[in-house]
Image (cartoon, rainbow, N blue to C red; front, top):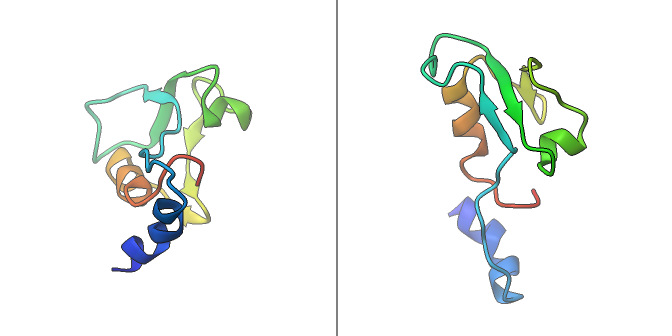
Length: 84
């Protein structure tokens, strides 16, 4: 319920809850569990590009929480919405 209560103010304000996206494609999409998250391509208008990320960079943490692989990244981003 924690996630639902966090989203209620947005819903009450009539805002859509779109899933959060970083705007990248992994270098090795088939290495979901056993490789670091290396950025293959970065969308020019996406949040990672705006933060200065480039292809070849390795994503190591989200909000101070370590990220060892693509699966962990997806788990951390799951409850987040566009703009978080």
